[in-house]
Length: 403
Image (cartoon, rainbow, N blue to C red; front, top):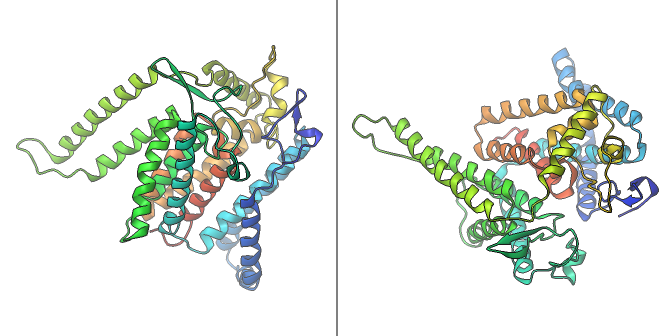
């Protein structure tokens, strides 16, 4: 982590603005460097073979986004954090292009994601039982040092007892839950694996489910219930009852399960506490809307939401709420304007169109889960681990082989 002066807001160092070098960044740079070195000749040949207008337009449309981003960060008040964000966007774009160009398929990531889910879930479970961080080697792997008494730590109240929510090596329990949930969805591909790999898949499924449960992330719980209903609706098989079509019977059972599930969800949620203040989230949303209103075309600049926050929201007291707005669509619109939001939505529509054409439902469901979770939080666009997973999903979605 690097902490120049421009990472400070109201005299406080903000980790969202800190230029950070992750081990995964080094891995991505090595992968891209080797791949570009091996394929530079093929790329030149493909560019030289562009002859028709449609071929040239197909190449120029994605590239036209970067001049817009260039203008956006040139207009940003905090020029340095905008440059850092642009570098990260280029990095993830190249990684997604690499995944798509090499025609990786979703089953390719099944085994690595199983290991990642098991690893993260076990750390989370130990933290929950210990009610604090593990320490030692895990500090070097990204675990923060905390306990139940750490100021600002995420907590929940269960039957009147205050408990710490586990973080694993993520920055917040909600991020842990979202990453594990989407990983489990992405792993749900048909396969004929046996032995160790099959064991790892089921271990990841069980341990991941426990990690999501003890994270007390309401948004992950809600999306998990929705995904479960989708799975039920796609796999229910019934014999036709007299006077009752299969579709009607299936829909009735799904509706019944939905009502029971959502009722149970809200019943359990009522007994929990320690959540981030809803008022703060609404205030951040109002700030984002005001930023959009005053900067409708280009926004306030990449990664400039927190830097500009004091100009739109006067906070008093000893604690400041300096975070991005907890909605990825409002965040995109606030930082890149309605122009950036339209580009983002356009790319999502094209991706869905491609996925629906190939009929790969785990990818459709995983991307949909991310977008629904993105209505309640920002981490898919602001934190390293979720951004990597989102990039891989986009890359898999645009690979030629859709299975």
